[in-house]
Image 1 (cartoon, one colour):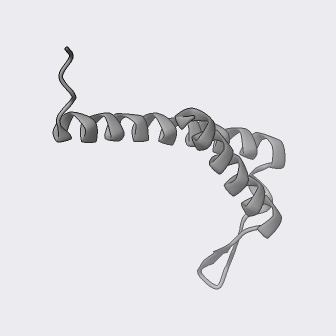
Image 2 (tube, helix red, strand yellow):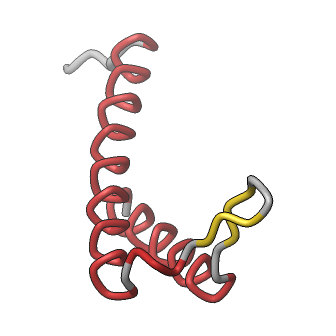
Length: 71
């Protein structure tokens, strides 16, 4: 019979998977910059203003890629 992994091993695996998902998100952000261009963001009065449509698309893609990774 196999023994189960302890709490530290499981937390370490979660941290490792988090690094992989973060790398996927960085690649996704790079691809989005290639598609939409770097001039979609503007600095107005010291705050970055972004296009809400692109933000929502990026959020949905990040949700889909992380769900796909863990499923």
